[in-house]
Image (cartoon, rainbow over all chains, first blue to last red; front, top):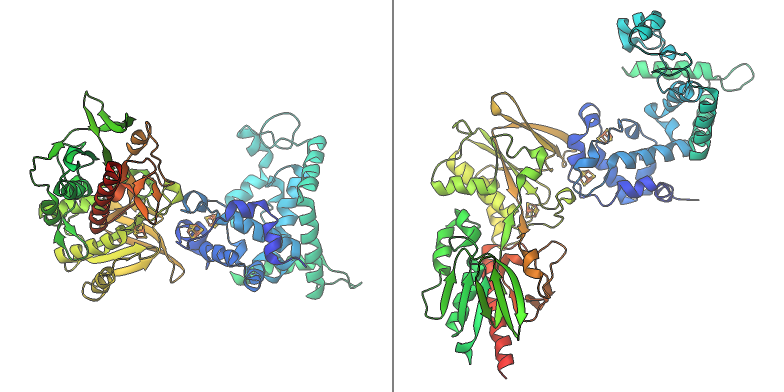
Length: 235
Length: 344
Ligand code: SF4
Ligand code: SF4
Ligand code: SF4
């Protein structure tokens, strides 16, 4: 079996992201996520640098790696030319591939993100697709968003966008040909494999946790509800 | 015949002068070529020395070369070419000055890191961000360190490793003397303002001298200076020109925000830019840090890669005052040895 370290090293982003860390803490000092969470990119880098299998396994099973906003502010400041953000990208990939993500609350949300943003990209060509940001499931967007949502045809037209229509312009409809190409990009780049992995591991976890239908199969609607509420419980 | 041999020394700082004293003492003819108007080099900018707070003037006075019939001092001589011609060296500056010598000592010293290049620290933008060299200037004037609008600082933060150990500035080496300089200056701040809180943000405290750790102990014990292990990420200015620092207290593992009145950047030592010129017409080479490369760093530290050209002081690597002087003396002895070998 490949070790965690081998799995991490297979990703070129690790080579790019980790030269050698002197533990100075500049990345943590500049990191916006560290301001809000119990989160410390320096210690993540130090853990990966240590090569300690047990600690790395714990890391990819933890909430920690999902707190990074991937803003890459840490890159231009590091005195050793490391990039903690990239190291975290690699940890995330390994967590998605090995199913370690289901062991943490923030990790489990991969399933929700896949169902929203992942589906949006492949089906519409947009990460954030206005029609899918339903006010009921996105109360954080507030009343203004609800109003825009209810009047989206008029609002988007007013600001010069071409929502869901043929032809050029912002938010235009993305043609089948381009969507097929996107799909091929996902297949080639391994994105599709990660999607499959996230879905498979989430289904297994749902079943294990008792979210099953009458036939004993994973009930992903119930599981989705659980994930949404798990998030709320925490708040 | 020793008294017929002529040695040119490029750089009239403490290393150049110390080497000149040894060589004239041995009977050689020596010419010191100093690019500035006055001798003494960088030490002119320093007030007190670590680790015992001696005045730098003491050293400057001690190395001042006695007027000697064998010594010639030329100031404002910015040598840019050293060429071998018929077994001797020809040194030229960009006026019409040409000096011929049998051996050459490079004692070009160092430059201070230009702190404006570390933009996120705000030097040259925020008035209350100063460098260790600025601090020496204040100390030397006999004044007390104050904020830009003349107030007593309530809090001062010293920042270690500015322009050293930092791939982003192109200087990955340690400048070696700035840690102990930071400890010394921190104590000097508390001597000026006993009520002032002083913090040193360090990554490693590199206090390599046998008496340096005692100063660190004194700083903590008697002056209540706080040492925080974390490197500064950025400085911003708040209302009233107060500064805000962002770092991580890496021993606590938490981001740290601190308000302070003055920030002192402990800037590192860099090789002189003109070293590149001085290498052009001969076999001299620079090392990976742009200082002069020694023939070998163990038993030929004072020999350059060009035979007949020797190295003294902090043009080899960052050095303290003591080390510079020792280095200069060994360079001088090496010149003597090599010229005597030539004699035979
Ligand atoms: S900034 Fe770079 S060297 Fe410093 S702790 Fe972060 S990764 Fe390590
Ligand atoms: S990329 Fe991640 S670790 Fe780096 S500064 Fe942004 S949030 Fe922090
Ligand atoms: S001596 Fe200290 S402050 Fe200077 S570069 Fe080395 S570690 Fe940094």
